[in-house]
Length: 118
Image 1 (cartoon, rainbow, N blue to C red):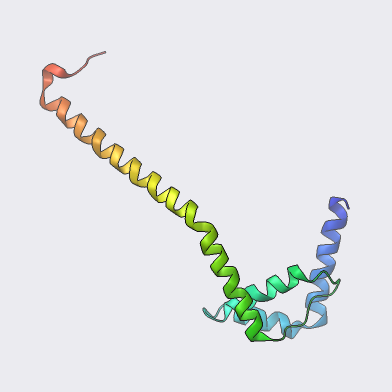
Image 2 (cartoon, rainbow, N blue to C red):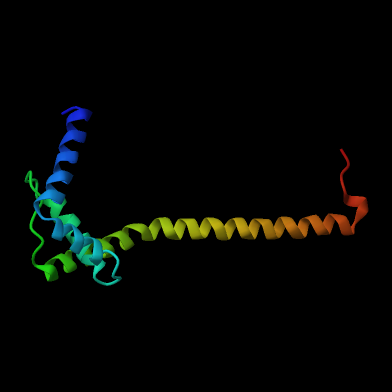
């Protein structure tokens, strides 16, 4: 499957999604704005990825979609724990290094005989 076919198929899938049931599109748009209910939209996205039918799946079983969306959030948070910890540690170490450098700078200026001139 070349790139043109992939884009055509995704464009046609989106057209079918909007043409078949515009109400479903509106419901998903409204649910995506509401903080706790937006997990239904994530669950529906998972349902779209799991089903490989040429037409979009029906929007039903909101509780199951919400639970699936919650699973996606939990897995995403767990997946991001290690990068968050590494980034936090790197910023902390950079801050500690700059603090040492900052005091080193003042230390040299308090003793003029130790300064280096290039």
